[in-house]
Structures are given as C-alpha cells and as structure tokens.
Length: 246
View (cartoon, one colour):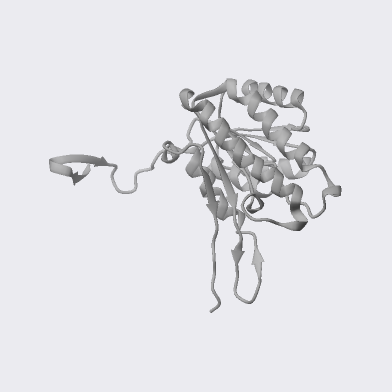
C-alpha cells in the first residue's frame, strides 16, 4: 500500500497502482428530463458511466429514447423509459412513482426542458418549460434520498438580452430564480439545487459561434451530482469555451 504524507505526519491512504476506483454515482438513481437527446442524452450517459441507474423522461421520440437506453445499458446499469408530457402535473406524479417502482430510489433529478425559440408564436415556453420543471420537481422532492440533488438547465438568454428571444429570456431567467429559491427552501433537508448554463463557443473567424460540444457539458452536471459538488447549492455553473484564431 502506497501512502502519501500530509500535514504533520498524517497519512492519506492511496490504492495500489492499477486498482479500480469506485464510480462516482455508484448505486444512485438519476431521472433526466428530456434525456432522449441533446444535452439530456449526454448527461444521462455520463451518469451511467459514473455508475448511476438512469430514468429517461421524454415526450414522444421513442426511437431516440431507445437509442439512449441502449447506450446507457452498456455501462452495466439499469435504465427505464418514461414517456409523456411533463407540463402535466398528473404525469409528473406518475412518472416519479414509476421510477421508484422500477429502480427503487431517486437521488438526482435533472430538469433539462429549455429550448431556444425564435418567435413567441412557435410554442409556449412558459408552459412547456416552466410547468414541466415545476411539476417534476414538486413530485420528486418528497421522494429524494438523503443528500439528494436537483440540477436545472438554463441558457445564456437568462443573462443577456435577445430581442428575438423574449419568451426565452423570461423563461430562463425564471429558472435561475426558481433554482435559488428552491435551494434555500431545501437547505435544511440537505438537498442541493443548482443549475447549468451552456454558453457559447467562439470559433476561429469573425462572428462565428456555436454551442459547446454536448460531451463537454456533461462533466458540469456530474460535478454537481457527485460528492465533489456537496458544498454547492443555489449556484449556476456557466459552461463556456473559447477558441482563438490560429
């Protein structure tokens, strides 16, 4: 056994070289809203790699959901698919019950419902996004295990004005306020509530922007879900990468 010497003769035990370390989320269960594709899929797979059983909550893209489930199962964990409209309170209550029956517990809830829309008439983000996050959080909180975690996804529109994304600005800004308010409410129960804001990746060339790679976002959710994030609550992580022209 190799030992590392630290402050005044105290020792920190380290496993032998090549020993397998326990996975960060081993034995935990995570529910990921909109986990069938995009950010949700990347996060769900990252959690599975870290040892968590995963429930995918999605609307109706059954093919994408099944593809995500197969990717999760490769990591020797369990996965359940729950299809339905998260903007409906009854569905959210039933979804949590199904997850508990299938996987036995709930430790982590990822609310990942936000989408950017160019025109207010295209959809109703205040309904589809905010109601889904509110109802699912409300349904999950009584069943979250000790030291449970809620992670919300917001967007850069919460911090910067966008004339063509007025509804999004209102929605994502409200998600930030919701995150901080619920975090204060649940502090005494030891439940942490945080959010992640995917930023903009600036690439070489004038005025060229794109969203950061999805795989690059997942570690932020893992940080907040795992023990390394145990001191964080009511916080928003801004994930932003930048590349300069060669």
